[in-house]
Length: 190
View 1 (cartoon, one colour):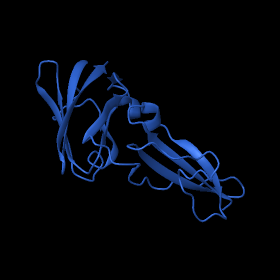
View 2 (tube, one colour):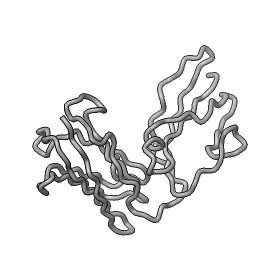
View 3 (spheres, rainbow, N blue to C red):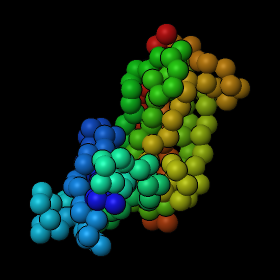
View 4 (tube, rainbow, N blue to C red):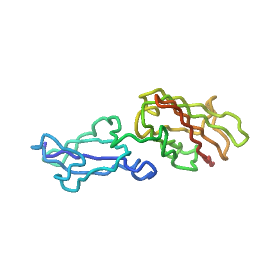
């Protein structure tokens, strides 16, 4: 191996660009056995602001320039404990078209937790009727410390696509330090 490419995703939880897009931090020569993110002795590095969460991935690059697959995604690393149990609630894209395939046919509900939590996401239609319930256990995707991304494909609990219109998502997190609830409006278009 000639080098390792290190990428980071995360930062300000209110910025979708920072929490969604991977950015390359450095190409580290293979002769180095360690790389410390945030260490100013490495070019372009500096300390991260407290209360933020970051995810990292690495891949090897051969002398011929051939890159390996990315490493498995590890748990988010925090730069300090946020005081809020549940923060930075958002979703993207919003509105979304459930008729499209793949990532464009669903929205990702995003939020940051300050501890592993039991999370329940309930989605209601404009009249207040329950449409969908999503539950995430502590430590699982959707219930882990740091940034979480929970997809919704526009289907109700019966597996049928919902009608176009406005929906309300209620995100409730029950953590060791208490309970928090947030509300998010989601638009479905056809």
